[in-house]
Amino acid sequence: MLAVFVGFEVISKVPTMLHTPLMSGTNALHGIVLVGAMIVAGLSGDATDVTVVGTVAVALATVNVVGGFLVTDRMLQMFRKREPGGSRDADR
Image 1 (cartoon, rainbow, N blue to C red):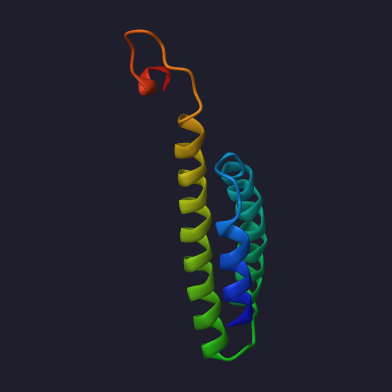
Image 2 (cartoon, one colour; image 1 turned 135 degrees about the vertical axis):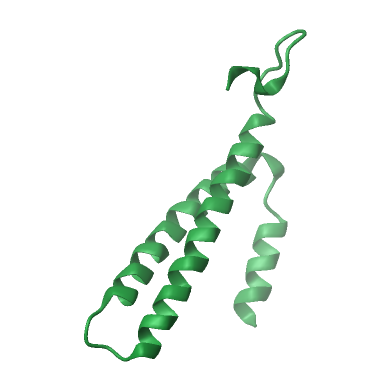
């Protein structure tokens, strides 16, 4: 409960311009979580429940990492200069 409260207080006070770098750092941390989850899921000789929990952790960490990168990309698009008469997605 304390971690939730402190996390909410810290994140709510982050200026808007720092959200993109903060998201990138968070994605790096979740990448480490994903590697750890893959190691746990791949351990041989362990009980089935450990493998199931590891597999669920891999799935959730993957969704979190991919979603974080999509949000970061979307935020970075807001800072690109618009071309006169063109759309933002013209350079893709």
